[in-house]
Length: 525
Image (cartoon, rainbow, N blue to C red; front, side, top):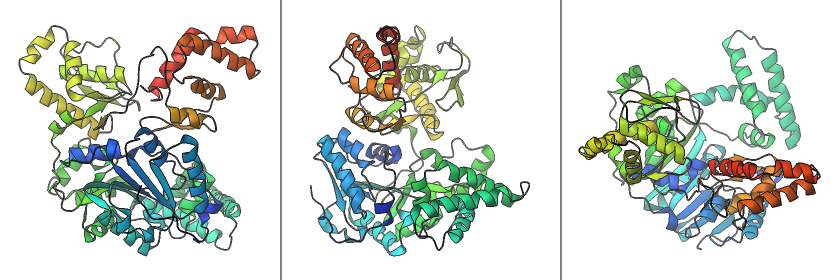
């Protein structure tokens, strides 16, 4: 792999003393970025053979799962903290990965010799570095990005960060003369709690302080230390970031959380108010939307300004993609082949509905297959087959029906209720003869409860027995063997007698646990 040599003699950073938690961020995955590129008419490099660069990679917790699941691609991360790189390299060595390299160095030293990358990631860096480093980041985005490449960059954003800054300014003032990390963290929390609890509960200021106290209490110490108590931290308006990107020959594509960029699910008054702003001026449209919704964090996707983006998005592009959705009928007896509206519950408990028969059947099929993704044309065939005799009439106007389905699916995606994939994760939703769990997750379960599934999502598995069971699902055991070995685990843990273990670890329990693992995206082919 090409890349800058490790930088020697770099001074220790605050991240050497207080490690920032490293884990996967699903929206940074090249597969997600490639999907967004396809929707806008681009032809991104296939993720099975791409090059990925992450600025501020920390422990490599985001890159490592990518490298594990995409062995034909190359990954490079750079971070200024020597200690995090050392620990990250140990994790790489433990897994025997040869397609991931972590570099201890300064972003300022990245040059043409690093080569070009199809996907560049900068999560949690842009707002937390000085202006000259931000300028260098934009230069890297431009000069080290392939012509059809995509950039993910996240940052604290206005107007939402104005509220966050109120609490942040109070805490920074209070700890201004403190240098020891734990003292700064403890005193910052105590100060904000005192101010919030003694402010007027019935005025705007008091409400803001109380809301911020809830936020601060929910974050881990190391996150508070690096995100809120970093004096360099600077929020931006979307327009500012887009303008700075444009100066470097880059253009804004959309937010990585696509529903943030879409007007599909917005109320009619908002759609009408912004109808006078051309869809090509996406930045202005979304900036005004931010003014309404008050976002405090953004995940922007950029590309070269020479790329011809297609706006508005043509829903027909969904035909090139795989679809996944955790939808289930609100009425378990729903018959998609009958007339009338069918209502569906989403994973987040929200409701969506349609009276289009093919779309109703598709949402049923997707829910049954979750978390697996289904190619559009396969979904059409499965949905038609489930409609019985009604499919005959639909097939006579199949193109029209598929176009209507594409529109429904795109609107559902734009509202944040459905996933689209250019490259479908290789998941298993049935119990095979010898079930196999994601090898990376099995490795992670040996040392902690935070796991990464094949969808690049984070799974919290806190139960010790559950993690030990996961380790057993290594593809070498049948269900019967898993039952026997799980009983052995229960007995060895001292939590059960032989009789109790036999009563607890039954074939039915093992099969239910396997189905649970499959829904978490932890079972693979």
